[in-house]
Every structure is written in C-alpha cells, then in structure tokens.
Amino acid sequence: MKKIVVLGSINVDTILNIARLPLPGETMAMHDRSVAGGGKGANQAIAAVRAGAQTSFISKIGKDHAADFMIDTFKHDGLNIEHVTEDEKAGTGKAYILLDDKGQNSILIYGGSNQTITVDDIHEAEEAISSADCVISEFETPIPATIEMFKIAKAHGVVTILNPAPAKSDIPSELLENTDIIAPNEIEAEAITGIKVNDVDSMKAASAELHKMGVGTVIITVGSKGSFYSLVDNKFGFVNAFKVKAVDTTAAGDTFIGYLAANLKSDLSNLEEAMTVASKASSFTVQEQGAQNSIPYKKQVNL
Image 1 (cartoon, rainbow, N blue to C red):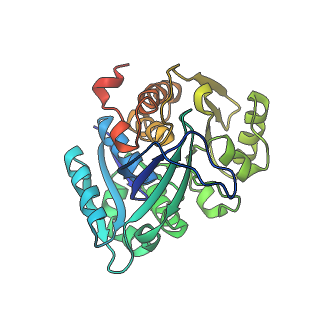
Image 2 (cartoon, helix red, strand yellow):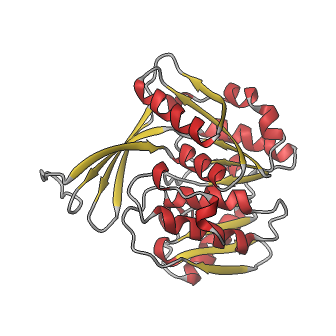
C-alpha cells in the first residue's frame, strides 16, 4: 500500500446555488444552500485514502463546531490525523462557493487556522514525511511549511507533488527546485509562467518554463478537455477527460491529485496510466454537488 502525506487546508464549505454568477453590485436570490467538508488539502487527502493509499494529513483546526464536523469525516474514511492539531485562537477555515446552474463555481476563502501552520508543525511530522512514498501540498497553507516538508522529503528520496493553487506568480525558487511534479490548471500555469495556456503548443511552452525553474515533471489540467504532461527529457503527451455531464466542478482537481499520487510509481514510469485513473476519478466528482462527499472510492473508479 502506498504511503502518502498531505500538507494542506481544512475548510467547511458553504455552497450557494445560483442561476449565474452575479455582476458587480447585483443582488440575487439563491436556489439553495448546503454545507459540506472541503479545503484543498483535506480534499486531496480524502481522495488519496479513498484511492487506497495509507494517508497522513498535516493541518490545523480551530476550537469550534466546524472542527468537530471535519474530524468526524476524517475518522470515517480512516485518514491518519495524528498531525491535525488545534489552534487556540484562529477558527477552522471556511469557504463560500457560488455554484451556477452550469456547474461552474467561484470560491471565497477564509484561511483561519490553515494560516497558522508552521515549520515546527512539519518537524513534528518528520517521521511520517521521511517514510512516505509521496508528499503533496498546495497554496492554502503557508509556503514556508511546504518548503520545509519538501526539503525533508527530497532528503529521503520521497516524491514531491505541488498543486500551485490558488494561483501565485511569485513561487519561491527553493520550493520549485524541491518539486518533482507540479500540477497547475491552465490559469495557474499562466500565473506562474506568464504564458496563456489555450492549446498544446502553449502547454509545451509553459511546461518548458517550469522545467527551467527546476521542476522535472509538469502536469497541466484543462478541465473537461483532460490533462497534458511534459517531462524534462522533452517527452510529452495528453490524457483525454472522460465525458460526463458536470453538475459541480468543486474538488475535481483535488480528486485528480489524490488519485494521481495513490496510483503513481515512485519512478514515475506509469505517469500516463496514473493520470488516466485520476481523470476517471475526477469524472465522478463533477457529477455530484459538494467537495468531499463527491470524491469517489476506488471500487467506483474501477479501471
């Protein structure tokens, strides 16, 4: 069984169902409102454990009812939460999701306790990190903690996967140089490289820039079209998405990351195969509203 460590955010999502995204200054009525577990880190950890990997999670919660709700979810899935600690002052993270009738969303984030994760928290989890097959992080928690985790991982030959979301244009070189696989979507790839990603040629160009920054393997996800990959030795390819009717795209990218990590060999020799499984898993996620509740289990994906 693969061993994965995820460093990332915990959010309780409030989903607001609307006909379309509002214009500036516009007031609109909602169709419905619901609450679900979320946070990019938590979503990725849940995806990895549901994909069959032994998964540990590094994160922080507040002292509130939202924390109780999330911990119950983690325990139900068998996620190792030894390194999910409690912050005395900051509340558990929150996300407010505007979801339109076409299944597209806009998301507002309150970082809360997610932003209190420190390098010391990473040192507390060093044993888990050094013994993992793969570690994952994203940008909803402080970057210094991610850098430290990736440095520890690289020192022990552990594969590092960075999901650079939300989009940033000023990623520290120390982080990129310790990243084995970077997996942005087209918006995030443009933010990092300055290259607008809209076809295979622009994907190649953006990937070339990321290789120059020190990353060996680039995966660019492009929603319903699929995902592009590029290796530093100039090998590249494209994995088509599975065609389904999307209801809600929330957590689709996180599902992809978690399933990718759970199915990827340490030498990355089965990259395209792992991406295909990850794409299939994501196709289940978009067919149901919500984040963690929509992430499928391995037996459902069945590839």
